Every structure is written in structure tokens, then in C-alpha cells.
Image (cartoon, rainbow, N blue to C red; front, side):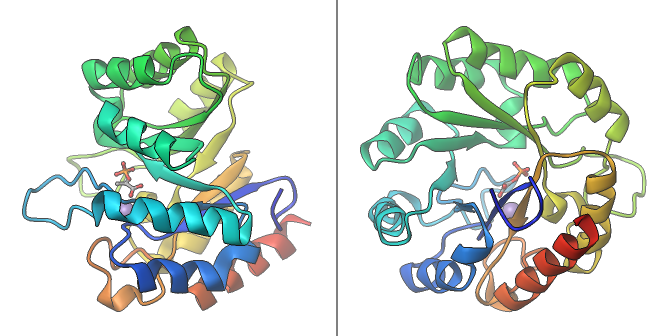
Length: 249
Ligand code: PEP
Ligand code: MN
């Protein structure tokens, strides 16, 4: 388990864009994180937004897992994604906030991993409906997935909020009361939408008793094809982890 006492750290690019970007990011951060995140398929709100590099990144990910002996987690949005991920030894897959809202999609994905020894992470749905989140988790429990984690990435709000998404610690606490055995990660990158707020939100997350973090890190955030404002560069990411480590110990 990572540098911050008993907290799991997941870090990596929002979207995989090209081979050099993925390898250059991983090279700088692999010893500061427990697991690499890599979005190869992006479920974007608009079809005009960058969709991720797609399946051609799968061999790169397999190579990184072997070369650095570190697991890589990817987002899956349908059963084809799952089948391809399994083919390339990817053992951790997450459902994005736009997938968790759709019981048909969640059920299909759950069926495709029935009784497999893989780990599934479920991001909270975009809307603040705790039942929808729990429903998604139950679908994976029912097909025999034992390793489940959840990710608090905040909720869409019509109000003029300070962050990209609204943190709802109250919902998270209700969730934790019901499922104390399921670890909860905080995603300060998507919660805040801005690197300048990531440290503050991370500290707040620690106070709320989260079990770990997911951070977006890009080797050159200014040139990122998605979520450029919220992706940390490797140097700032390492400084952040060092800061959190000091504050936590
Ligand atoms: C992501 O993790 O890159 C992502 C798209 O997040 P979310 O599903 O939380 O919007
Ligand atoms: Mn992102």
C-alpha cells in the first residue's frame, strides 16, 4: 500500500492519447502510486470531445504491467471493452459516472465478469441518487465479484457550485454505514475540476475517512486532450503525495 499511511493511491492520465504520453507519465509516477489509471475509452458527454485512443493502447498497458510490475486499471463502458481488457491481462476495471446511472449497461457488464477473479470499481452516478449507486454494486455482488471498491467523484449540480462536481460527504457516510466493507476512494481531480483545489479536497477527503485516492496525472497537462485543467503534472503530483504523507503521519 502506497506512501500515504494505509491509503491506496491510483494515478495516471485521464485519457491515453498516445504511446509516448502514457509511458512518459508512468515512468515518472510509478513509484508514487499503487495502481496506474489509464482511460483508453472515454465516455464523453459530447461526441465532439476526445474519445480516448481505444484498443490500440491495450498492448502498451500489458507491457507497462510487466515492465513495472504495477497493475493498470481502465474504464469499461460495455461488454466488448471487458472482453478486450481480459485478453490483455487487465484485472481492474472501473465504471464511470455515466455508466453507473444505466442499469442495463451495468447488468451487461456484470454478466460479462460473472465469477471472474477481477476487481471492479464503481464511480458514483452523476446524479445524487444513492440507490442507483448501491444498485450497481449489488449487480456485481450478485455475479460473484468479490473485490469491489467505490469512487466518490462528486455529483452534478444545477447550482452554481465552487467545484466541477459537488462533494456529498453525507451520501458517502450513508453509503459507508451500509457497506463498511467496501473501500471508498476519493477522486479530487473530477470532484474539483481544477488542480489548484486538489490538495484542499484531498485533505478534506482524509478527514472524511476515505480509504484512498484516484488522481489524474498527465506528463504535459497543458497539451492534454481532455480534462486539462484538472490533471496534475508528475512533479506536482509527487509534491502533493509528499504533502499528504506528512499530514497523515
Ligand atoms: C474518468 O475517470 O476519466 C471519468 C471520465 O470520470 P467520471 O466517470 O467520474 O466522470
Ligand atoms: Mn477525466
